[in-house]
Length: 256
Image 1 (spheres, rainbow, N blue to C red):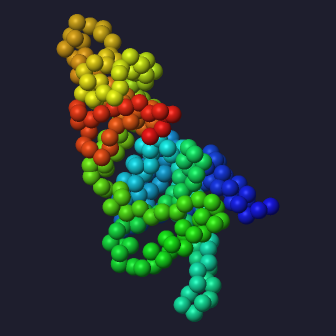
Image 2 (cartoon, rainbow, N blue to C red):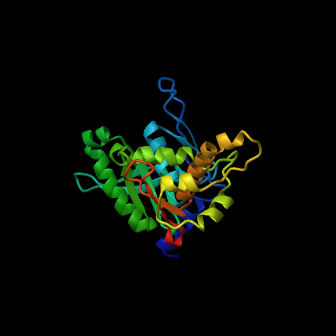
Image 3 (cartoon, helix red, strand yellow):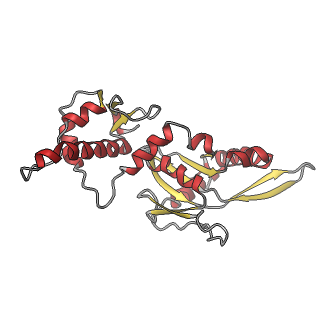
């Protein structure tokens, strides 16, 4: 049995419904507010225990990325060897914060490290280089480290927060099936403002609904557009602040 085959088999198991994280952030007496729970339908337990706010912010990016199929928190321990200054092989072990399975079948291991910590200690750069090589050679996967420069870049991060705030949840009242049907008759690309004015999702029940309906329609349509962007059915420019002039497009093949 080849190394590649065994590696791929073991990676498939970390995204299964029954997989449990190999580690969980403890509740620290001095920092009770740092760890928390991030809800996501892409994780086996439907939620992820994040160890710091930077990780929670990074999870918003990953959770709204339509190319990401599954997320596995603290999936396994990576045991690898490094050479010390004397040329001796030393054993090292690292549990990544996340493993991400993309729709194309590729896997990325991710750690979240604040920029100042990375800059102050060359250990992190050396570890990243070693883990990139190890994950590529043993697991046929990628490894990366994310910090504030990637996660908090503007206006991308504000747009990501807006997307995540309008994600589909159990109590969501957005009629996506109806929105998809109405969008079939909309010529795209089209501005977001035009969609909000022209697409009518509400149903009139009483006379005073005529006053409330335009605002309700805009709200439902906006939430629906955000959800379809998350699903990869629509595309909107994330590098500019969302506005009425934002251009909405259909996605060929259903991915962003």
